[in-house]
Image (cartoon, rainbow, N blue to C red; front, side):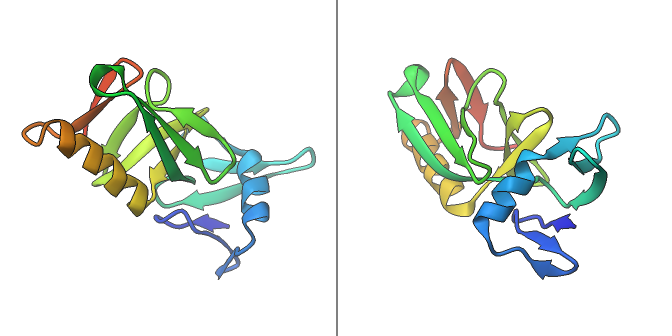
Length: 141
């Protein structure tokens, strides 16, 4: 199995089109201490290749403004996270990633990233970034 850079899941080279199946697989996905990824069932542990991040942030909700802002992301695994302590945003290879759980990150889907960038630029075009849950996250490397 493989998860492409855009968050698409593949099995034997074919895309997995059923969202419910991807969601189920994402619930048994684990990150090993060596950085590799595995799917863990009661009977076996299967390696899975992850190109960048195994999950995708598919939606965003924001409330408040400036330092009082809180930004929440909906993840394709069914998780929801509030950007802030424990759920930091970082750029890796030019891609925005948010930490979801147990070493698993989600790449921001392009429309979500554009929405986040719009919020950042509206606040301070000279220093693009966003505040969420008391922390500042720059949107440039």
